[in-house]
Image (cartoon, one colour):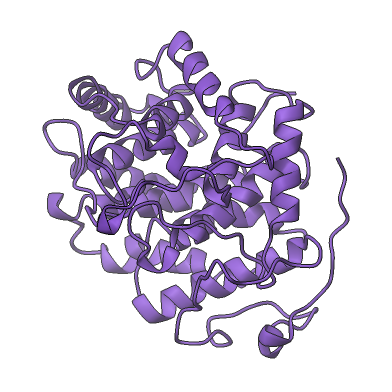
Length: 359
């Protein structure tokens, strides 16, 4: 399935979206854009508009909030290299992440109470390194080393509990994200003494804290491809089958569909989880994991998923994902937009290096 990139530009963002201009920190507004399900679909898929949205949103978050976060500029760092041939980025988000090590932590590093910071920063830098150069930078390596120094004795890390499922609700996600990042890190990082010792503690945490949901099991399956002792091949196969079975008639997946087995989890005001509406986070995640687990890009199920992504971009360049339990401005849409790009790359729709090595 081949698609050509549209150069359709939106009047609403024309002030900083000229075709030959990159998005910069100075050019973005100071207020975050609203993320609404009512935003119209784009007339056609545009990789350039996706790049501009990711740049604009991540830099605005950086300007407004002055922090790295797992739902906006971390996934930006993961996905942005996939769009480097479409639109050059300013490099300012990368520099911001590097400054955590070079400036904020130059004299005093994070404490155990701030344990999530090295995971978020280390994940962003590591995935960005792999996507852009294929080599682990010194600064990424240093941040990953810092990550082990704030690991708890039980093998986990302190993670934000903001009631923003599935990313910011319990420690389990942070642990599997750390495992995934260490596994993806090139140049044999997972075999360094610090990583090997930390991974042993991490495995103990996962053994003592079994997954509560299919989303937990999906993260375990993804991270276990490169890190042993997290999930067996049989468990990965079962998880993949469960994920693929949840494909909706329009070709996409619903993030909430991965959470229905999490006892006690419900939407605010007691509403039932919305499991019948496809979204970018769910669709992107399944396509990425499926490719990582060996499903071919021409598999009809994956092709239907690709079609959903190409058909459901919004006019601003984003893809929408409703926050499963707490709308919280639907910021998970930013992760979903990044996952949509990584999924397209994994399925051969974008050039360059991909996480998936499957053919």
